[in-house]
View 1 (cartoon, one colour):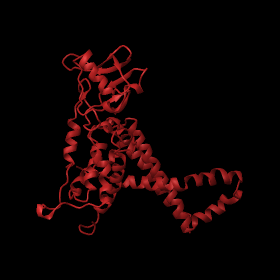
View 2: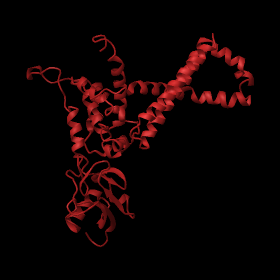
View 3: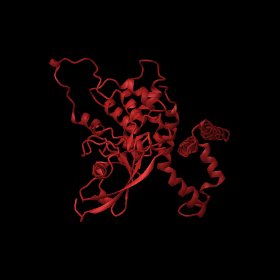
View 4: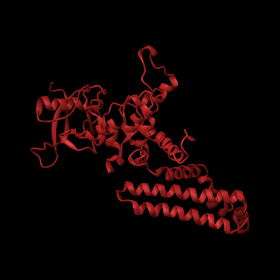
Length: 118
Length: 250
């Protein structure tokens, strides 16, 4: 039987799932609630100069890249398999669209993180 | 049976290929006692009400795996399910989902049996062993790895539960993958490489989307979802290692 290339997508999905389970809620709290409401954290924590500095540091770059790309790979894998559950049998188009979005997002994240410099 | 018995309506999906164009429901009024199983209800129908009803059964004690059916839409063993739990409502009995109906509650198991044969469901020793060498020794930890998976009775309830098998019957499916794992994880076995070719395919573990209903319906406490998950990890490792030059991996 033909070996499936699913392990590539599954390991990215798994890594994204692990990462989102570990830090997703915390990110929602910080970026969506605490900072905008000025609650627990200073309101200028995520100001443009702060975030630029963050994204220019190598650790900030690594963190941002991992969060953006792995969350995306995780999300599209789930969407793809949900489409399959809904009965999309010849799912080549869906597969290309889903994983294409993740690939594009990954490339964009890498590009953007590089052009903002160090 | 006396008049004090309660009576339950059992609605059975009938299909006799030589008579019926398509399956239809037939309802029987069955007197029952507290300890009567759905299988015993079917046996009552066959003996007392309608001898033309066909269904598989043998042991009546959840060992043979023959009497699986959709009971009120849930894959269950007829012998392991009690009429009292449905009374005063009726109980609906249909053949196992996702399998072709051969006759009434009897489904065709050819696909399942074919898959079962392909995984080599037996221990393949590393080398022939003489009697003088004695028995294989296994530690409790080695036994623990395979024990629950060896409880499978091939009743196919997990196949009726699996939405992915329903969508695409090319999927090897939960029960056979659990048994595959039972042999691959056995310290006495040496056929892992052969079986991994089945695991690694799209029709192997990669058709599973981790729904987990297979493990819920298993009447023997086997956890096929866990076996599949362990083999997704094993297959991913196998996938990335096969790119390494020969001999550098395991």
